[in-house]
Image (cartoon, rainbow, N blue to C red; front, side, top):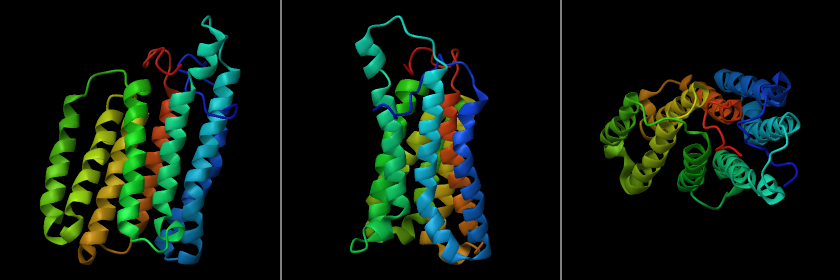
Length: 250
């Protein structure tokens, strides 16, 4: 695990840690632009490189964190094992997000939508565990009550079109809202990422189940909010400072 990202809240801020996210940011712009232009020959392959590049950014940020962290007074075993679980949760969230992005490509013989829901559902469970255990630093804010209301409203709107996917979509909505609500307990960057991730899946669900109501440009909007949401969650976790969940990211 020498290359695993270390989520250490005591690390001194370092601008160099953010350079690892530059490839993800650049490719996100290219991908969203391709979606907007209808250039599927560019959009499809670039989509499958987004989460791997975000993982590269996380690995880079974790490496810079380790270099900028003073030696801990804890035991050697604590220093080695401490970051393993949060690092594994973060990378697992990105892995299953990647599998969800490429559900049709990676599992061509399986129904795409159920595979996508299952993959992203696991990714959200990893995010909820990660954020609740290692990044949250305050109770749920009052405005987070909008998330259960969102879940009810989305079920009401989509219900006539869900068919046999009703239970799966309802379950996925719970974990999606759970990620957004848990992110609301973290710093503003993570909280914004959670809202954008939820916004992305809201637009996508309307495109899937109510396509006649959604114009073409919303395809690009799905990916814009998705890339921004994922990027802000991951970068926001590393931005947590000593006053944000101090000691929890060690």
